[in-house]
Amino acid sequence: MAEVRWHRAAALADVREGEIIGVRVHDASIALVRLDGHVYAIDNLCTHDFAFLSQGFLDGREVECPLHAARFDVVTGKCLGGPAMADVHTYPVRVEDDEVQVGLPVGLPSG
Amino acid sequence: MFLKNFWYVAAYDHEVARKPVGRMILGEPVVFFRRQDGTPVALEDRCVHRHLPLHMGKLVGDHLQCHYHGLRYDCSGQCVKVPGQDAVPPSARVKAYPVVERYRWLWIWMGDPALADPDKITDFHWFDDPAWGAKGCYLHVKANWQLIVDNLLDLTHLAFVHESTIGNAALVDNAAVKVTRAPNNVVVTRWIIDAPAPPTFVKAGGFTTPVDRWQIIDFVPPAFLRLDVGCTPTGTGAPQGRRVGGITMRNLNAITPETETTSHYFWGQAHDWDVGNRALTDMLVEQITTAFLEDVAVFEAQQRNMTILPNAPQIDINADTGVIQARRILDRIHQEDLAAAATMAAAE
Image (cartoon, rainbow over all chains, first blue to last red; front, side, top):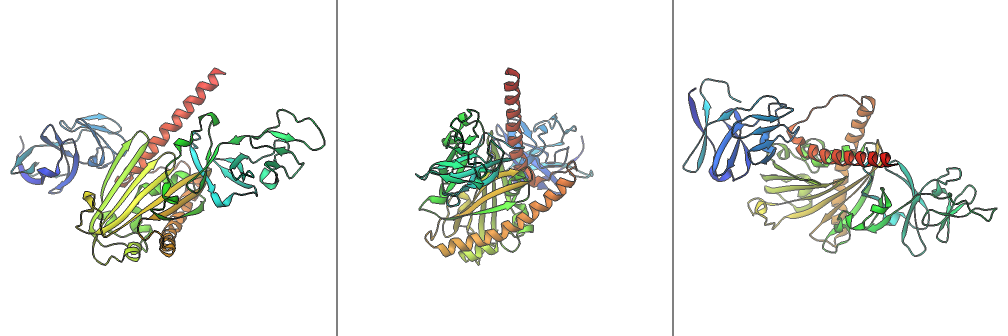
């Protein structure tokens, strides 16, 4: 597994249950989702036309892109419906002292 | 594309009296007048004999008489008199449209009259509510109605088109935007926290220190956009629902298609402070008028290009979320209308 460096992404209080927010982590645009107490992190850019998934519509663990309605699973990053075809990357998340941290790969270009 | 099963704003109450007024609504010529008791009437603006617009005629009691050969119509659109003969052909009738007067406007139902329910008229009560100072305006726009709807759903344009009045850079860079949707509603909520007030707000409320500013855009089909806008001094709790020491306004918009490339843009501004101050109302309307004229220049230029190149491609940006969600609702309604029409045609 690639080495990751942990970065602060958000205050835990800013990621509310059942909501998706967009944050910048280092150089990456990341979407954070809180479901059943767990926080998940995926690329925030839709793989179709780079719209912000954090401005989309969350229904359970599916997010619908706000522009052209592509759908992604926020836990696995899998693309569930077009016009996007590629999955979004997922990132490891850990919560320490009420701070959400995201692990970005070291040595690879980010978002 | 026109969506017919809706109430549309057709005119201001003061525009229609005993002189017939002709106006094109959703591609149909309509004539408006009032009965002697003051209630409004809307008929097809075309004599069924030789097509002359009936608005060129005159009222005889509650009957509208055609200027050409004197055919007279009652308020249901039935011809009741043909000069020079006793019998009136039963087929001599024109369409009558349901029309209701509310909120200082005349509203017309363009669809199947059996479906006309006044309870479905969109709420614009601010125009005749004593808790608000308000004034209504009108613009004729040589552009498709949907371009105007789009404009009101994406307010990032304020920073570029309206720099001298209601726009500044904070609107694009610092705005927190949230779009929520329901089957027949889109709400775009924008907050700009701790930023300078734009020129119009400085004039209205004298804000020389930073403000928290909100723009909450409510869209209902087909083309009604009611904006809750205002600001308070920063840090006084506005995002949490506490509005003190600031200003609150409504920018109210009702767009009625005239043709596929022209529109009737009914709009107005309301303010909830100093409500009896007509000079304040006039100043706010003047500022917004300046901005809206800048928009009209944009719409008409867009339309010129779109008329010349109707199939040219376009791309979307993140700021288009509200715009796109509203267009999806309108497209869905249009598809439902087409399906209903196809069902009816098949049944015949």
